[in-house]
Length: 166
Image: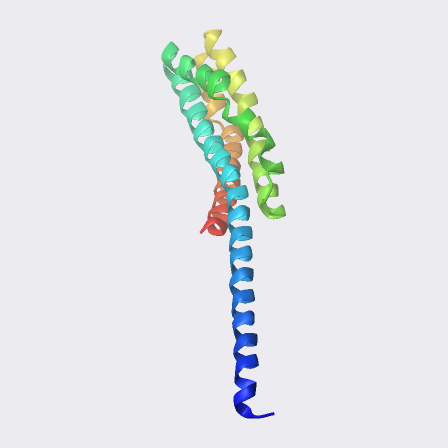
């Protein structure tokens, strides 16, 4: 076969290979986009959990220290209306989260539950007029340790998810 007759089939083969490569790149790009979209709701709910936890902590502390009902209202609004903790309940099962991310989120939620129990005791103490006990509950070592553990686990989970979203 002459070299000039080989050029056409080689060019057609190269063109076919190029078209196939472009199609595969588009399919892989679509799959990556879908995986990132699966992560996005998890990231959003994790942000809600962190912000909600911060609001609950500042509200219960303000109420314990001052007895001002505005702080109690803010606490109850978060618990009943915004419900960041409940909305984040399905977060560990969110599609696209890695096992280490899920473990960190579950650790953060366990610590949020410990904080919620201490906050309930502090609210009850404040309502009973024992603000000294309430302040001790929300500034004591068990509360601070659970708060630190929550913050560390949530920050690590958020960092891992954010790095995958970039």
